[in-house]
Length: 144
Length: 457
Image (cartoon, rainbow over all chains, first blue to last red; front, side, top):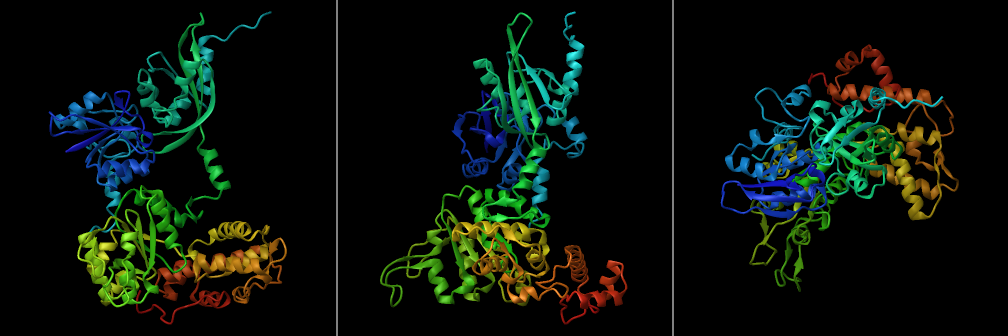
């Protein structure tokens, strides 16, 4: 399973909307090497490029709501508002516990989420919450 | 007597009381102070922010490639009001302006940097209001009924899913399709539009699929179809509800197999274009009636966008009129300033069955007739001048009465539509007697369908 981590200075890039590069790793294969790729400038083109390159999981920093919706619509499983060193994130991806192990950005943790009425207890959703967005997009009739 | 410098507590109190966000960082980019306004603007509490890397707290569009604080610390020069945006934890973008300065200790040694930032959200709203937006491509509106459309366009632009745009004729379906195309990654690829309703069946087939030399009599050379010409761009199929049963099958096969074959061809070509379809008909009803294939319907309506008619967004009329006047002034080298109030009242009183296209044509017509700086009621078609029973072109009746009548008319129409034209139910919903409703329907010349809705609700 391919995962993309938007990076800057060996950490997760602070803002996906303007991120310049992504590290693509095969989370299932610990022997594989990670590959750094440049991202297009246009925010929506970044998502298209990631989806087209076969990335299934996107680990990124802050991401604006329209882009998060677009990423979910493009079929990406987004771990938004993540922080920390790239090495730690790759390790968490390979351990299969990225959703729980990755640090969240300050002010985006569970306590803050609760206060902002994001999700409910037990949910692992962060920030604006990809799953919630994906659910709201589900109102469009799916293919039969 | 010399002035005593402020002590530390006073300086802190001042920082807490100002409206601008202020934070300071040390030499390792970790936050050392964070004032109350910074908490409010970023949504991050002080205790969460202190000691953290500033870019992960501030989450600003400038952090990665255009950090004002980094520049200031390198050059020693302050930066004033550089604009960008931050992203709050709820995904909201907040426009801000940033100013920076070097932070020194009492001995003058550099100990870090200070950044002040101001929330520009209200200024941004004012700017938008002044520029009368929402505005994507040639699509323009400031109606709340259009907001969902404008909100959805960026999302649709980022995906490759087939989109069905529904709306009455003249509501701007092609503009929306173009906006989706030009806001996404396919913007540099072709946008190819086909009006399915304007072409006879066999011509539509050769237009869509193209043909090879010798495919039929008169096919003297290869002709690429629109599916080919659209390449990796967008193919816009307007009036999709008008295509024949045979073409429906052929189109369905293309959408299912994601490939197509020109007439007389032997090798299929892959379909790389994104399909956006549009219709002014109710395709779901057509499916029920057996006039449109259900499988094709589900293929094309992966996502449906409904465009409201102009009568549901009457507040857009002044904006659209100004937009068309500006455009015709440019293309026709004229200098018309606007409409007289009476002209605008007449435009507001019309029902606009032809929607935005009708309005555009009426403004264009007025440009031909108008020799002054302002469009007068006389420059409008007679049908418009007589469309409102309480307004005449030469009547300088106060606009308040006309606006009241318009409001009543729209409220009554909305109530009638909501209750399937059942007058009794509509009157009840409006809180008026049925007789009053009848009187107002007559006075305001509200059109009614032949059915009265009693048998429905």
